[in-house]
Image (tube, rainbow, N blue to C red; front, side, top):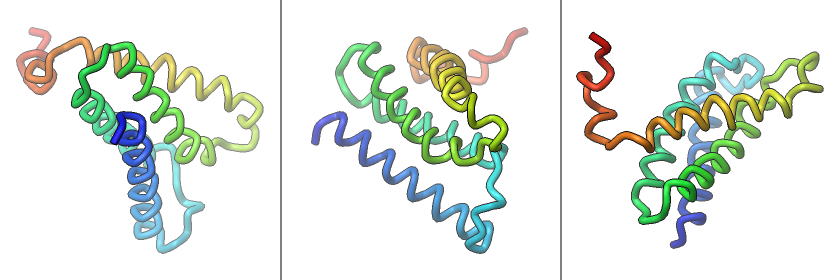
Length: 127
C-alpha cells in the first residue's frame, strides 16, 4: 500500500472514530459538538499521522506536506461544521491560520526532534 493510501485510510478511520465517539457521547445529537471537544481529538489525530509519516523513508518536506494535507481534510470534516454562521465568511482564513501556521509549526517542531527526546520530560523541562 502506498504512503498516500495509508494516510487516506487513517484519515477515514479517524473520521469514523470521531463520528462514533460523538454519537455515543451525545446520544445521537451531534448539535452539542464544540470546538473544545474536537481540539483534543485533532491533536491526538495529528500524533497518529506523524507516527505514520515517520514509518516511511521520505524527506521531511514530503512528510510535512502529507500530514498537513491529512490534517486539512480532518479540519474540513471535524472543525469547519462547528464554525458559527457569523464566522463562515472567514472560515477559509481561519483554516489557513490554524492548519498552516499553528499545526504546521507544531509539525515542524515534532519532526525536528528525535522521538526519544519528544517523549522525555527532561526535554520539556525549562529549568
